[in-house]
Length: 103
Image (cartoon, rainbow, N blue to C red; front, side, top):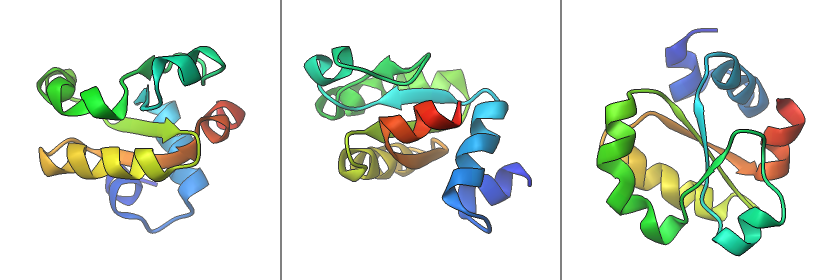
């Protein structure tokens, strides 16, 4: 499966997450710092949803797809909208445990 399939579908979400992980995508957990400290996927960085808009320029410079996660997927869905709105390739992985399980 290629990058376009990852970005635009054509496969199960789990397969797209696995492909993105294998391609070295950055994992961004958009929960609060307190939630993040309670557990997170290996290698994830914590950028709370409320701070994400201020970090888009930095994420654009990294020029890589972003896997977004949170507790249930709702905040990650909002984060996808923010990032895709500025041209950053991203996927809503849902709960952080999903990403951790697929690593």
